[in-house]
Image 1 (cartoon, rainbow, N blue to C red):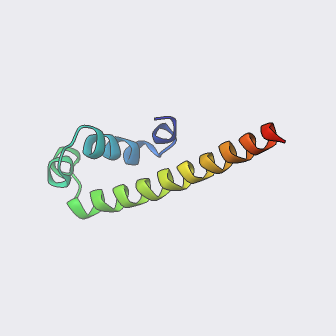
Image 2: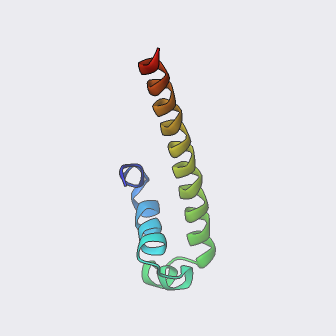
Length: 70
């Protein structure tokens, strides 16, 4: 959830509406007055950011664990 909060405001709103609340791209697009393709673009970019954030967090945890075992 912390990583989601780091997204730009509109991207965060769109991500939450689609992925957490389960609304369709069409519903969110209509609600926000933007096209479903723009919604898709925001979701793709948010997902890439969150995956990168998750990967880097996993690396930090692994390095911490290794250093603790040494």
